[in-house]
Length: 368
Image (cartoon, rainbow, N blue to C red; front, side, top):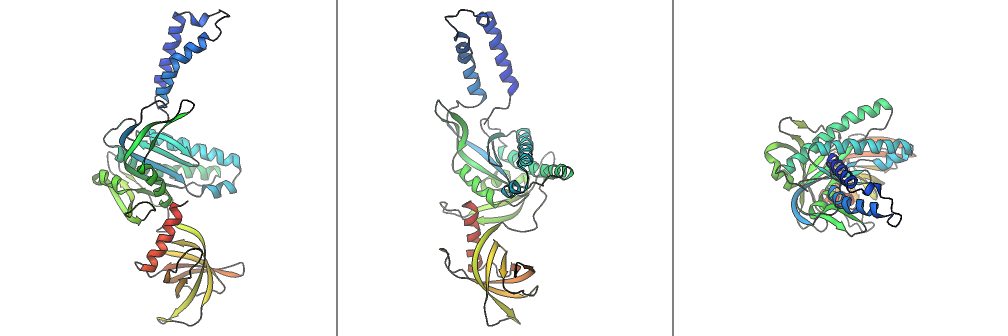
């Protein structure tokens, strides 16, 4: 994490140079003391650099808000584009996100692969840190629309980001030793927001209950997703940010048509057709390859009519206990490699079997 006020550092260095000129150290010619100037510079500049880079700060407890923004599908993009193009795209993304974070008073903590993590409230609390973090997240998503227009004009791939925001107690300060230290934040707040980010759809901003509680009068909230994380006894509520109010209303425009995260799977299942509200005899073997809260995609040996109803059963496999019967409706069937790729919408929700499927999706997401 780096301090933002570079001009202050430059002013300090200028003053040190002037002091050295006055002490005649810059004109040192004594061959018996060749390192005197270097040692003098190190002695004077090290404390300034430590403060500037926030690398020598005490570890303190603080109340702050953490934001994590991640590019969706970046690995696939890397495989489809020349490396030089993706380096330019990634640098452009980091530059744009950093500018927005700093404009809203946040501090970039680190870049993690193609993700950026920012902190609001340390090293200095302002009282409205959670709200500024949400406004920043909304502005970041708006900026993605502009960025993608630029990419389209240049013939570059579009980028979409998922963002998560969480607020609470953490420890901020320098961690490491004399050889290498880094100013950062640690705590359950950081661990949870890292998990939350996996659930954000393209163009979506998710916040925790704690962030929502601190900003409730100044934001508009959309859908709510209840997720269970391993190691956390109670379910975690994830709230979708729709808009932030203030001097200027910032709206988060939806990007995804789908209503939930999706995961890639390879699950054997049997499909039985329903006709006139009765289950027809005979089972159709299939392989589910994509799964979400409200739908799935499977490869079947035969084509099912659009809008027809089926009942699906996932047998125990690979440590997965039986989920039970799940009812669904065929949305689309496309011939593919001698089989039929079939998209289905679940019609039985809020059942025990549906809850088991949702838990399977959730566990896969936070284990990534």
